[in-house]
Image (tube, rainbow, N blue to C red; front, side):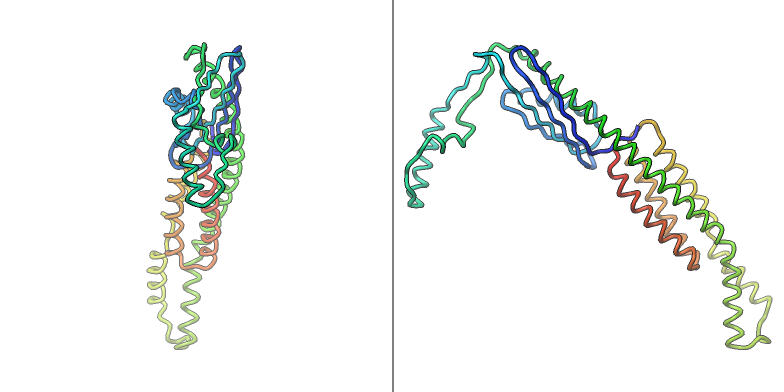
Length: 293
């Protein structure tokens, strides 16, 4: 199953005394990197959440945001940190004096400091609270994975089309390759005639030179390996499970290496043009593969 590394999921849980809303966003990343945005009350669950998310996702930069709401009266206790509030007051007055600003302080100034208040839930068991958080995050993960699967299927369909185009270009190269030595022989013959005239041609020497050229420009081994690599790439893309992105990226490096060798050895304009087009396709595939887990 091919999974895109980008997606979004949302999950909710409603209990008798509290509600939970979870959002999970994923973007491309070489490794698995998880960032949590939790209210103070839920920070105790970060390790559990990390294990939960890590068990479902293999790669990507993951942002998990959880919102907690309380329904039952008296289930929340808000405590003012009075000492911190007085500290802020003194600092703000000192700042106003330093900058020669009016020293009028209002409640609005202090409401900007969220750490002045300590929010604690009362009467809710820890495991009951965790069960709600887990349910919401699980739902968000399922939605995220469903989205990643849909996008992954679209990506694979496009990648298979591009792989088929690469195979067509390899066929073109294979069909052109046998005519390269003969084309070289005709060019060499023409240059000799233009320079020395027809009588100066040594047919045996000419044949030897063409044979040496044919050996140097032979790309049979490269095209065989290239077809093998493309077959492996197709197999990876059509696989039912596994980390497709990294495997495909490795194969594409090998494909690029064979194309470079063919371009260096072939010494033919038509083959060079086919190689350029093939490398463009490989680069497009590599860009798309980065989006696969």
